[in-house]
Figure 1 (cartoon, one colour):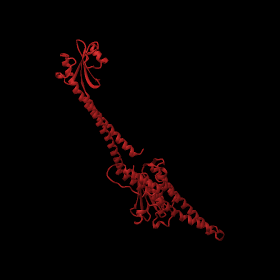
Figure 2: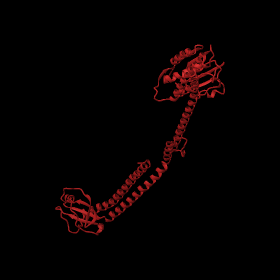
Figure 3: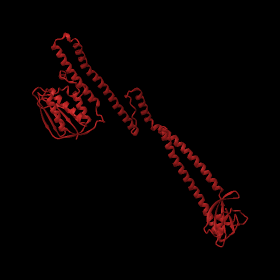
Figure 4: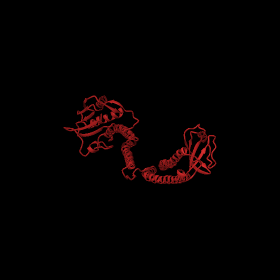
Length: 430
């Protein structure tokens, strides 16, 4: 069952219940009022008849529309108008029922309304009135209410269908767009954002989702293209060196040694590049377990590793205790990339200053600093400054730092340090 049909049925059902309730209320109120008038007349006439009997008369004085019958204690009655004798009428006549009551019955095939009043001296008086006109009016009222109810339900069904069609039009557009995107794989399509209601908000949210999906696909395509390009260079170089080594009989030992050194360097670059690509591809994987990380201890461990990696440099540290919620391996990778970047740009004998304070890690080197034209791009994937192209690296280190920072709700920035060099700040929100 479609949503449109369900909405139509719900609207029709609600209206049908309301119309039926209103019709029944109208009918019973009208019936009550009509019977109330008849009962009032019968009560007055019965009271007078008990005091001044005019047994079996019709069309006399106040009883112009009433008929009167006397029921003896034995249950018999005068032959003028044969009123049906029921057990309740017998009980009123023989004294076993002391209160009057009203009854609907038929006399000589005509519908009547009667009041039965016990007489103290014995017997009972029955005053009844033909109610054929009331029955006819009530039948007519029932027919009118049935027709009105049916018309109301039909109108409600039609209105519900029209309203549900108009209301669900944006949903149909969203469904059509989703189906077309599924078929074509192209998320560039957008749906109209009309109005200010929930459907307009749904359209805007859907378009926002499509924009995010399109951006993710474009990012993935760029990532694959860039990765392919970056991998092609070392692979080509390695293939060239291997082809040359196939002719090693023609090479002197020194040339062979240089080729082996090149292959070793290129394999290391390939390993680092693949590791960086894997790190970027993982992104903010929700399946990775987040724990409380003692950031100062993690930085201290990374600095010790950097001292071994760059023995010609001096690493000065000032680390205040700090904790952060995150993935320890990813945080360590980000810190190491900052330290490695500083070590790569520092001259032998230089100092790298590492400071952790108020949840912010600052790594300052005394290298050439960051060129003005490179500063907006240094955190982009595979970007390498002109001065860095002669240095080892894949251009992924700082982009990984940014990915890790954003995945942990933090930020990373780069600026020129006072007195020269570069200052990189990695901050995590407490």
